[in-house]
Image (cartoon, rainbow, N blue to C red; front, side, top):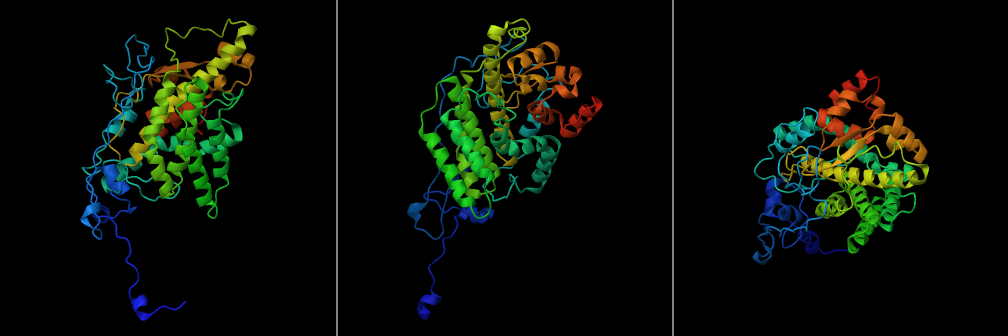
Length: 416
């Protein structure tokens, strides 16, 4: 097909980025009335090549208040009352933190200086990894924090879709939690993980669209009300988020970032079904139970421990992601991610394949109850074989990877 000289010399005008994206040298998605980057930063979005009618002053979104759940007042070990999972608005813990608590890691996250313009997320294409802010001083500080505290956890997080497909487990989801049936939300997430493992350069757009379609189907459903459905809903969203935020595709990452408040809401819904053990209410219930009740008690423990870990991991994951993207919306540095929680450190309990094997492990092996991120008893009394993968992830973030490697070496084990 031929063109006239006039047509060849006058091609259609290209879309121009908004003024803010041009100034920041960032990719603009050309959305109107405001692009995604300006919307997230709540700044005026102005397109030089468009009429003044499309300029928009982005208003702050309305806050969504959540009705308190029955378990938002959780009694912690020392008898103080926590305020549950408040998404970063919990009151700080009084008194000094234990030297083996989560405080050093969380304080490192909160004290980073993100600069005056770091509001929301900056969507930058970065294949196979999360992108940190580009300010040199901050980038160096983040690189140090990631290398010393987060890299081990990030490596395990990226493996989660594969381990879910191959072993029906993650560090926060017991392999037998869905033994009696998997809710539809997790069936779709499991299938999406399997589909994602087959992704290559040629089929990537199709596979990511299929996964996006599964996510949209999940979001169209009402929030679940039963315990198992609530757990499956949160775990499915976690897997979708891991896929989309870590993939490196800019569209997938932008969609994942918009899903973050929904993941938080799902976790808060799961909170209503979680029972947090404390030193006072955690009796030795498995040591003397009869065979007739053992199976039911074990199944209940599998669900509750998976739910407790899922709830804690959700906010740990979001805290780490917000740090890596330079957001100032970090959860409050109270040593607990704004959340009262407890979970059990025991490789032997977590890996038990039968109820009798679980009871034997409960009677004969060490197990440690970690409340609000305090690892003192674990680090002073546990053996290397007592700590499972979930414990390694949180301990490496709390202590630092080199320090945890030294701890394992002193007990004849290895972090890897």
